[in-house]
Amino acid sequence: MTNNTILDRSAGIAVWRQIMETLKAEIVSGAFEKGSRLPPESELATRFGVNRHTVRRAIAALTSEGILRADQGRGTFVASAPLSYPIGPRTRFSEIVSGQDRAPSGRLIGSALEEADALLANQLDVPLGTMLIRLETLRVADGIPMMIGTSWLEQSKVPNLVADYADCGSITEALRRAGIDDYRRKETRISAELVEARDAQQLGLPLGQPVLIVESVNLDISGRPLQYTRARAAADRMQLVVNGGA
Picture 1: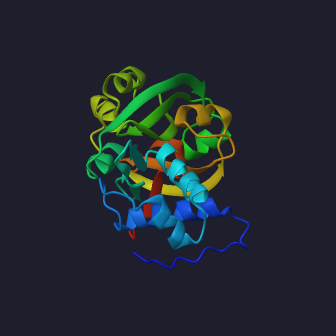
Picture 2: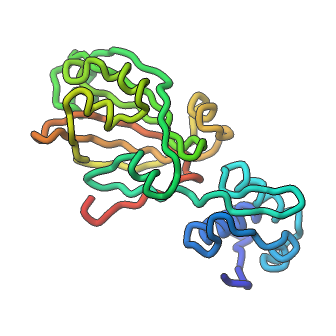
């Protein structure tokens, strides 16, 4: 770990946020392992050439994200690194989270039946007006909200999708119950925008924070579009990793 980090005070980014991002990058890289103790505030203040209040603000931000944990009288410890989320032909939230020794879960936060408009008809390759199920889900890792997903699927293919997802909390399992044993990612489009009020409440984010927008289309084993999803991920809690074959 470097002891002479240089902060760019002319970049228009608050110094405490630069410290926060530096520490987060080091946690992701493995410089600080899960459960390890962070150096004292005084040591970090010397390292970054700032006062302890500035360091304290950066630590508080990482604590609110669930990355750090403050133990009274003992110090500040690494609770978890941002989730590394690979995007590839087989992108499965539960498998990705479990593979990083975290507990995945999913909650149904809304659903509806609606007719396919021009956008959805194009994404799912169905006629305009086709009845679709819209599924709103909240994905969680170790109790920390990570991602809200809005998915559309043909009602005729998965008539019991809402009840099945509410029961199992996994889209993969819900599709399996509908007789769809496998599917693969056709494409993923990634962008960013400021969080909307409703999503901010679900994700526990302040208004004005950025979220990653992940739009994807999944295909069934015959190569037909099965699912179109528009997900909003907490940018500070996830790192999207695009695999070479994606």
